Structure formats: C-alpha cells, structure tokens
Length: 300
Image 1 (tube, one colour):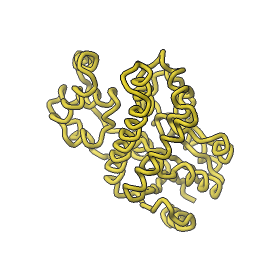
Image 2: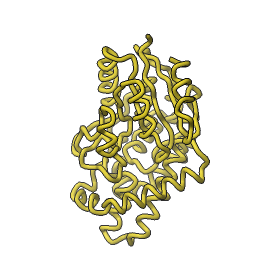
Image 3: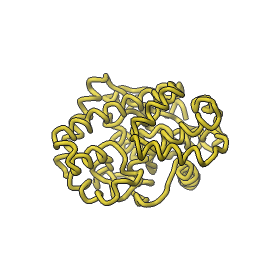
Image 4: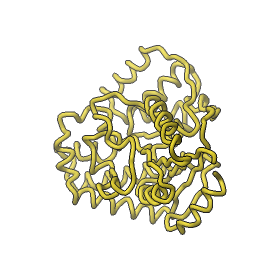
C-alpha cells in the first residue's frame, strides 16, 4: 500500500484536532502537529494545545517540544517532520498531520521555495524600523511593495514581514514572485482534507474559544511569560493583546475583543492561503466521518 500522509487543514477553531484524532484511531496512526504556535512548551492555553485526554487518545508529535527561547523555524520543521514521517511509515502506511500554519504545512507536503541571499544590512534596517515605528510601518511597506503577499501573510508576525520585505527590497521583485510552487519529491502521497463552515459560524466558534481561554486562565499564563514578551514566539495573537493589558495600554475587555478580532482576521488569511491549493478536498465541519474516510481511501 502507498505510504500516505493525511493532512488536515482549515481555519482556527473549526474542529481539526477532533477530526485528526478520529482519523488517527481509525488508521491506528500517529499525529504530527503543523501548528507553529503549539511547538512551545511554555505556551498552552493561548495556543489551544490539545487537552490531556486528546493527547492520550492518539500519539502526537511536535507538541510543546521546544522552548520559546530556542530558535526553530519552518526549515527546521520541514527536516524534522519529513524524518518523523519516514520513520512512522516503516510501521504504518498512514500518518496524519494537522494544523493551520499554512507555510509549515506546505513545507512538509510540497517543500519550501528557494530565495536568493540578501544583504544582511537590509534586515538590520528593517529591524530598526520595527523598533522605532512599530509593526504597522512594516505592514504598510509590504502592502506598497507586494499586495499579493500582504493579503496572505501573517501580518502580526514581524519575522515573516521582515523576511518578505528583505526579499522585496534586496531583489527589487515581489516576494510572491519567488513562490514557484515547484514541488519537491516526497516518498509518500499526501491526501489533504480541509474543514470549512460559513464565515459567521467560524467567527462564532472563534469568539467562544477566546472566552474559554480567558476562563481557563489565559491572563495568568501570559503574566508568567511577561519577562519574555519580546521573544518572537510570543508576538502572536492571544499573547500580544494581554501584554498590552498588563502594561496598562488596554483594559481587559478591550484586550479580549482585540484577541477575537485578530483571530478572525487570522482565520480569514488561513482560508485565503488554503483555498489556493486545489488539491485540498473540502468538507463541511459537520461532515459525516464515513464520507471523509471514503474520500481518503479513494485518494490513497
């Protein structure tokens, strides 16, 4: 039987984790997380890490295996994930990957695009702009230089913004022009399953998830990480807004509303990214599980 990676994608809070566990149990397979925010052991509530029961229901990999103080990027993940999949396929023709970080999913399923070397001074200058003028200045600059990337990139991630901008500036070409979509050869077949729902349903699920995070102690979790607030891993939705609250810039109600708003925007960008991939088979989030199984068996 052909070695197969079942990749579960879709917007945040749509139910990817629950589906991945059901699939893992059906195929007696392991799960790899491709959610870059769930890699860090210090971040739990704000990243919607699977619960203890969920982690016990199936064997997971790449969940809280790194510290926020470690450097770990998408290239590192590509290598580690491919090695893990190769190892898992020795005992089982199926492995499952789940996550909404589009670039990390692509790194495993199709490989990363090649970019030219860029003068390090450009990155240093962009970091100075970030320090002096804030992330909004980088966002505006990217919008002017590469509208296509601006519409799909994680705008709240300064590292991603700076990477895109240094390519634009260093080559005088849009970052998006280097996204060739030339796939690397993999020793497994990928079957991509996407979960979707009407926008109003997605937004409602996001709002409810944020409320649950607050009830479960998100403020206390972020407070414990305050000394590390300048680390890139913590410059992410759910953490940066609470940092603003802890610094006295927001009241708590406004911080929570900002988390919801920024998460909704993130979900919109996720959908924009994944809808470009025509190989994804989309199912309503309330899909019949047997329909998903039939589709996977037909494709694999």
